[in-house]
Amino acid sequence: MALKVAVIGAGPAGYPAALAAARLGAEVTVFEKDLLGGVCLNSGCIPSKSLLDAAHRFDAVRDIARFCEDGAETQAQALLGRLSWSKIQARQLAVTRKLTGGIGVLFKQAKINVVPAAAAFKDAHTLTARTAEGTKEFSFDYIIIAAGSTAFVPPPFDKIRDKIYDNSNIFQISRLPKRLAIIGGGVIGCEFAALMSSLNVEVSVVEMQPRLLPAMEESLSRLLAQKLQKKGVHLLTGKQAADVRLDGDRKIISLSDGTELEADDILVAIGRSCDLTDLHPENAGLAWNRKGLQGVNPQTMQVKDHIYAAGDVTGFSLLAHAATRQGEVAAHNICGQPQTYNNDLIPSAVYTSPELASVGLTRTQAQQRGLDVKVQKAFMLANGRALTQDAAEGFVEIISAKDSGKLLGVCLAAPNASEIISLFTVALEAGFTVQQLRNVVFPHPTVSEAVADALAR
Ligand SMILES: Cc1cc2nc3c(=O)[nH]c(=O)nc-3n(C[C@H](O)[C@H](O)[C@H](O)COP(=O)(O)OP(=O)(O)OC[C@H]3O[C@@H](n4cnc5c(N)ncnc54)[C@H](O)[C@@H]3O)c2cc1C
Image (cartoon, rainbow, N blue to C red):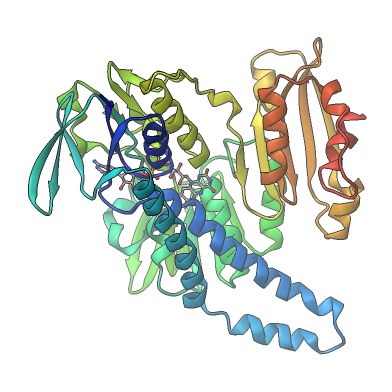
């Protein structure tokens, strides 16, 4: 008889897990209390990249006059003045709908049963859900918890929760503010700072750490800070938001250095939080806190016995592609085809201009681990393709073990860095040495030639 598998949540962890389990012969039921596709498709990766693409097009309009006859500046300005936020949002929604609709089709094809309701544990094998036909009970052989995360809004902003935006509901903002204060200079904060400033919004970013992107290599964060400042973004690093008050439509933030920041809207992009209150995992003997579900095996994704977890709920890596891999690993392990997850080889990318990306160890992490490493770096200034695109500010930095030459990690700032990083992910996965990478021939002219350039040093 087919294994009965439940998947709680249809985000980038849950839906690939469900599809993989169905493909491997399981009878799968997915519980989704909101929208198929989760945060990633509905209020995360995809909507933000659609907005960023629109923002890049406005940047291109700003720039186009230099290739035109005199007077084109006025026409470019006129176009910028006619920016339609509702049309930008409409494109974002159309893309999202196409992708979420695709998941529904895939589920149907795979004969996956979808329960459009919140699941809650009754006991370790039984879930309850309030459906249109009343509260129902469901029993399963295996359960995958892929319940994701929610926006984290700490004090002082929680006291005006309905007057501010967080990193999920910002996509629903009905008009562009004149002044936007972004609290948090992490990946989401920086992407929004970049895109909003391209859309003529005056942006300030408050970050309590001394620099933006505190989780990434310092050289990447320094470069991005320069680029954002050039775009007119006001960076307030090393400062904390101590209080916030409303004055009519204005929001006034008191900063830790005694100064005040005034804005028309606030986006709190401080991070994500695990909230499993309604799922009642305690009824299955499971514990959780704000960081995630406790006791998840970082290789197998097993939590206990027949219960597995995947995605943001594990707290291992709050990225969609990590969630997908974890979901697939959980499904394969349940269906008797063992696989393992490796958090060290999850690439990350920031979709600003230039794009930033990294995988494996950074120079700082290698130093902290006391490893004897070789660092090879090439600047985009010498890269023909980057120069043809006026995008030569970046670099590629390759870290390898000094004794064996084994590749350990890479970080890069370059056009299409989010695509180029996959080359290194494959090389790391395959255990390449820098010499093996050196033998690879890159097409000319491409940004990825900078890799060969760095390795030749
Ligand atoms: C603004 C923003 C931009 C982002 N950009 C990127 C990016 O560019 N690249 C990237 O890799 N990551 C990005 N992320 C992160 C990415 O969206 C998440 O890592 C990813 O969505 C996590 O997937 P998940 O399946 O674990 O959780 P989620 O996507 O949160 O999905 C969980 C699903 O479970 C459902 N659910 C929860 N509890 C229950 C229950 N009890 N019963 C039934 N259903 C339940 C929820 O409704 C939800 O649909 C971004 C996030 C944000 C907020």
